[in-house]
Image (tube, rainbow, N blue to C red; front, top):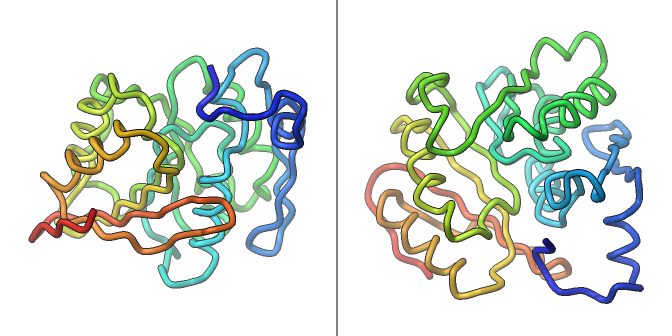
Length: 217
């Protein structure tokens, strides 16, 4: 299953099917294993993750020593970069992806930072009892808004994890009408703002928080 249509012979496809990909963030090279054949969309780096990492690196948010959780982490790029920027990060995905995710996290964090990153199973709407309500200052998600049947569970998960001070950052492409549907669901529970747009990759970053609601779509 592919999230977006693309040319089977194009550079984007070759990148997705490459067993390795590398990025430079937080003064370090992050080299990630990919495994499209075995895990599909969960095991490749999507543009939204790269854009979100660049946004975090801009320094507008102070992640140092802050509790952070990444949802649907896939290769772990966002969680790894947040850890390199000083956060204590819980990096989550479904059970089938955890071994792969853990291998990338361990390979890309220096030994002194590894205790700051914990890989943990989270299936949206199902494993919430394993996470303290409102325990995180930041919730991060890159390209996790694409399956309509998961929208209610994702929203339930966000509500469980949030306190009044929690900041949610979701990076995504707006591809289909169902993406707009999720954003409408989100703004029914949170105040939502678009805080960044990368025109070169067509990726939006939305910030959501509890409190007075703002309709800006």
